[in-house]
Length: 505
Image (cartoon, rainbow, N blue to C red; front, side, top):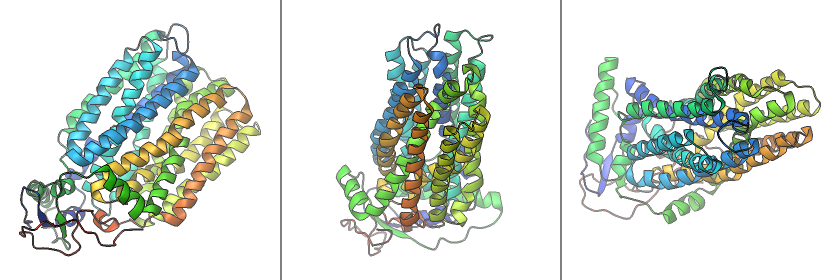
């Protein structure tokens, strides 16, 4: 079961991808899910806390001279801008220096920035460290998604990726409930409670950092970057653990791949690969990210303000309402996730995007007609986001698996950054402006904009989504380093990387 290879860059033939894909689910995979997937809980906690404490921060005695619109608009937009910048910066480093180094560094950045947010004494300080918190979280998206998809067997990849991305909403539930406790002035003073919510994020992050140290580097990244012997040793150790756990020998891997190893890849090569070799997939990725980014960043940051402005819900209890829609969001990927591996990517991506868009249009109509109150509005959002959450999670899965491995982290970073900059920065700013007016029609307009973008993205997916279910990453998009004609592993010749037509538009 051993692959031949060397520690220096050259041309090698390896079965590592096939060996990883034929593994049954095991304790080792749970270690990966827990160590890497928990970061989305932190992101959900961060975003939700800010949305729910916005009203309190704007009150006299909070310790900050800041308005509600600045928290839900400027601070939210800066957080998202930081995430976009962090995704691009750390995404490039992730493809160059490996998944593990970066998912440890990005978490450390998040921890430091969140701790400093908790001790903010002025608006500019709060804005600065919201940006830097987002910077760390953005880097997490690229490092974590690429590592997860490269370590999880192909037949489980869709559901695992969706559920892990959906765990964002477990953090959102925690953040919503935490805000209820922290904003209770019978327990904490106005200028202390909101700080404790950010401090909890630091505590959770430290726990995750300890767990994450045990998560390995991606063997797929290792064998391309001249570390094929380390990749071989890692996979062999995992195979032995799985065989001991199941009591059964593993079947022999059926396929191999010949790779011309390289240490790095330039931005020019990445851009040519994404836009020249895979133009339809590029359009798909941008559509999915813009739609979900606008909808989610706007709603997540602005939901509490809608409840307060239109339904006179007290600031201290908005967290209860948000907990309900967060639960619906988590149920979406949990219930629908397996269907992305069985029914297939194309019908499920298109269905969840279009379905959530249509339901959001219906919610906007009911709101405009005055037929909703705080409870029924929350119920409508819960149904809308049950489908939207699965669709939004599938955006990360899609861009992670439809481009060559050497570009994976950077592709995730690029589409996240561009899509989020287009939808995630404009969304909070637009929602803050429209909802603060107190005019129902303005908020309806914001709802319809989100619904239209989700529906449009679903129609794009209906025609362009890739049938990736159950397929190895290498068959969906041939690695740039793959040799068109397999060569003996011991061959000293290293030629310019060639590609077959597999997986190209």
